[in-house]
Image (cartoon, rainbow, N blue to C red; front, side, top):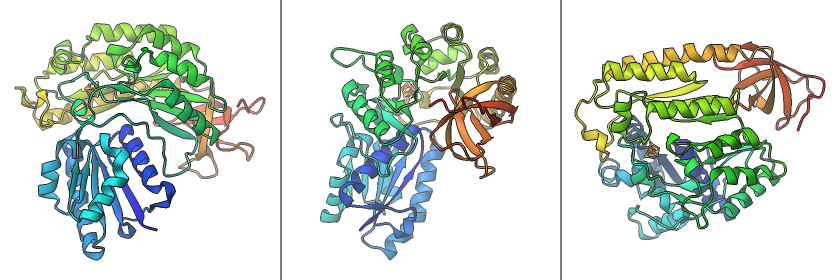
Length: 443
Ligand code: SF4
């Protein structure tokens, strides 16, 4: 049977798209997956355009793969995802070994596109919009956790972002389709799902009749066998009191929220076209903390956006301290061709971005460390993922607030179970704990 090797760069949406493409190609036994590119008859690179470095990585990987074509003339190399959508001509010029370039909307037709390459023996380019199709195929039986796309695209037009171009306008999948997919996943043993969308909390407003994410979460909560639900990525602009209420009231929804701030400066937020101010963001945080005590908060920040002064950056630092995030991702601004911010005056030098990036990570560490320490002595619900990476005799799992906990299961706990663990020590990036013996199994 021909073999398929998939390489994925970028975000969770890309991970999920890779799964869907591989699922389509492997169903009905057309391909089988291989971990070795040297053995493959078809190699797909799912790419990311969010930063220039990510694109360079893809070109370098394509250079590495080129000699394989000499050894296997039937090998087909395909590039999919955001970069395919935006850089099709550059890919053809810089990487002539690529046979197939297709954007995310064409994933549903991946099998047909590969067949066309083989039949016509010429490169195939397929980018542009396509009807919304819900793909539920997966290359491997899902394990404990699975991603489920609930909507595609984004209409926010943040000035630094390529997503509205690469993934098109917002389109939600009907609740029934999503629920059927999750029911099937739960039947196969999945205990936790993460609902995915570029602006997941805008879910449903394009449907007829319109609905919202809170209503969807309530229905997902009813699915037997499923233990936990998460959702990413939320936009502060669309965060409603109804959704905050669902974080408190819907039992299977975990008390954690990733809420990208991007900048703490109102001037920069306006230049980014984010649609909220620091004051509005702080109001939302206050409501979240009041409604869902102990909620874990994380965020994304961009440092060195065009025109960002030391004062603007100080405002971002101030926000990190005020909000007290449990974790954050900081990115140095990277100019993406075709986005409005790429041509803004006041591009910030790389050394300044690097310094600000280091500083924000230091502040984040300082702010989050006491939050982990505060968990010492508490009993937390842990979904057991498997053996601990550090010590295979121990088990590892995640709390509802998404922290990793390593503990001794004493041979009495299985993967997929939910147990109570008393936290004994907060480490820099994980927790240590001890199994609570009495009434330990709560699933
Ligand atoms: S909301 Fe997110 S995906 Fe949409 S344009 Fe802004 S950064 Fe990009």
